[in-house]
Length: 177
Image (tube, rainbow, N blue to C red; front, side, top):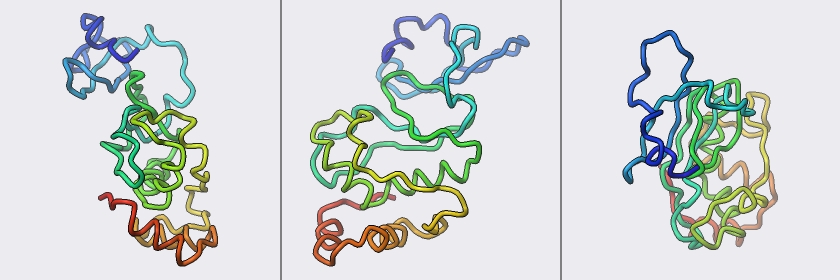
């Protein structure tokens, strides 16, 4: 749950113990701060994607204003879980693909599509329904090695956006680094 690091602090440790027991790293909030902690793997049921790379971001993110930025998305390594305070996007065997997802969601195109349904701070799975799924591999029709701005240009072309639609997105959606 969202507050498990506060409620059950005794089962989490700041550093990975050196005791030959298998541990999982978890990202959550403790005492109002975003933190990584460790806990024994035996406490966790098998979770799809735990072994994969993923993008993590807060489930509650800004206020739903069209064009706003996303707060704190990052690529998480393999064997990282999260509390319910956060959502994950993708489960990749390859870190590069997760980094491509991060570039995609930082782009203006993806966030414009997100903001068609994200009208509050809540950033649940359903709010992402209008964000088109992409191929994040090296065989994609998008060159993910480009800058975020250039990726957006490729996406505008891919989805046949009109100059007016492009101008709207470019002037109403804030840039992210």
